[in-house]
Image (cartoon, one colour):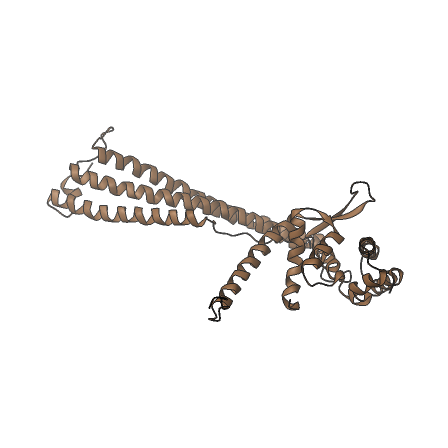
Length: 112
Length: 241
């Protein structure tokens, strides 16, 4: 997948994962690198930037029977920004889809 | 590259670039190594997949950049300005809700008079002479007006509420920006209706306008014919004390 599309989207994906549940840095990085062509270390700096911008915050918690770990969570502002950017992104994607599908070069059906 | 070399290279590059909280950042990569080792990767593989420590460090922002000036002086200035702005804003709010009350009263009054005219009853004896059929038509006209102003009242109320919400949200955003805190996205200044409600409102508005317009014209013609004059209210002495 083209690098240019990825850059704007990784932040949105991180926010999306955190909107479902709090988790630690490695969990987010691992999930994203498994699904997208990302280098392993690309996610951590972006999460740090989200924290500096106040969209996510961290706290220490002890997962069952383990050492305390740093957990990430969405802040209230982060949640609002996520909802707004998610809406924008989905509308954007639908527009592009429509433009691309209307170019007259429909992918041929196997039966044709 | 093994884990120790990777992490110490990373630490060195981060401190060269004057990054905040280096220990926290390094800890995250340490954790990354721990998990990947548990999955069976070798330290060399893990380091290779992470990329060069120098390139990684380059993706972190040094402290002090990108942070807007968030001093208390700025915040005080913005707060003072916003407090001053509240006076005209309050007048706007009063105006909006005034409209809601006026339109609501118009809707109620039109309904009442419309019903009385259609029913042909005059409980308080205030309705002037108006022949039966013309009264019914004008009654219908007034009911159309009632629906129209009722919708207007509802819309104005939604508008007023949304405006107030957006205004105070905007205040909060200004203060957040002044103190360098994260700024929430702005909210709409006009009421947001669901597509179904929007269609319903449009339909009712069109309908009530049609009813009002048609029955007014029809009613006027009927009343003028009954009175035998264009200014039938003179003939029947409506505004004579």
